[in-house]
Length: 463
Image (cartoon, rainbow, N blue to C red; front, side):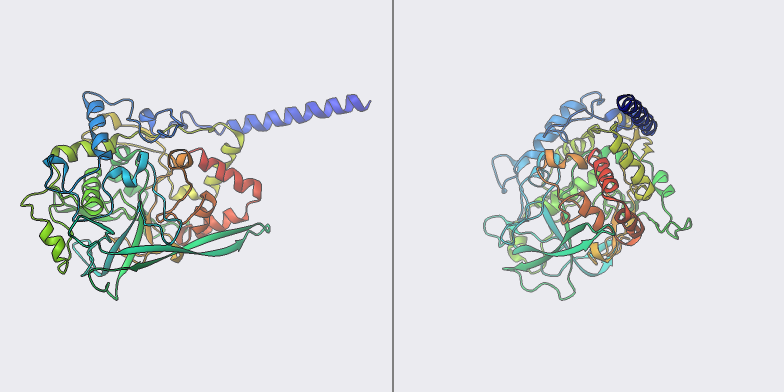
């Protein structure tokens, strides 16, 4: 009798599980694993971020390869025997693009106060802005450069330390967050401004930039809600910055504050700010007025980066494919997706949109993509504030970063450091640091039970 009862109970439980599983599988969307639409690649290896979009046409695959070579190349001091490939410095943070974006992945912050930052840079400014641009520090310019060529003094050093902040979930589980502090020392060009504002920014992963460029401006504006007219606590507004080619304002899409309007301008800006190489877009070195050795070392009459090389690196950066999701059809991951939406995380991390047209990449036209960003500015609260305006962005606003690929950080970059300065040691800490417009979502996340919180994290790890 007991055996019959147990058999019946087992059948009932199995039927129930199958029913629940069938129900949760109904939540799968067609092709949702292909985050980059037809440009997605199936690659879960350490090279997952370094693949070209598979639908490139013409000679773009060859140009992608040469762009990759320039991306990885170490630039040298001018003059050299290879004139097209010199010009690093006089002041700089890295000798190559891949120094910060190793394997096209995400950078990591220093783990020890004595460790030099490699892929974490520091934007500097004082209170005023002119023509959308923050006013640089009088003695150290717009970006702190800890490296220099021979004969020029580096600007100094910076150390990063952390304070632990402990907290509890309503169910009694505990967590700890680390808050960074920055100390600049061994300064070679005098004191920094007493009104100095510092914005730490870590090198993001590189995938899908061309797809984001192909999203129409109107699509992004449709997500804005500056007055929070729907009352969900989320506003969202576009940053408008200078298009340095036209001199006109343009909607910002790239960078932690959405302060660059195009991939090309983002690439040229990084060449100047990070490697010290001028281009047609940014023809002047960032030598402050008192940095005479920097000014004397830079004696070029024209810009250093050829248009051809800038074109190749821009193409390479735009054409990096988005890897397909993993485990997207697992019940816990699907449940995490539903919770992500219930928590209204998708209010900023927009789950799906369609691209319009791209002037240089028709391959990116009309693609259904899942970038998990609206590319808009949102107030993230005092905890994440850098107190430094950038374009229209205030000191508490940040652009919603794309989430595609974040689950592959451990494989590609070998770490799980998130947020604009890498303070979060895992995805859970990244969620808990959110404030401002995301406060309600964070409170709702904290109210979940442990199983549900893990399901949200498993969903994020699948991206």
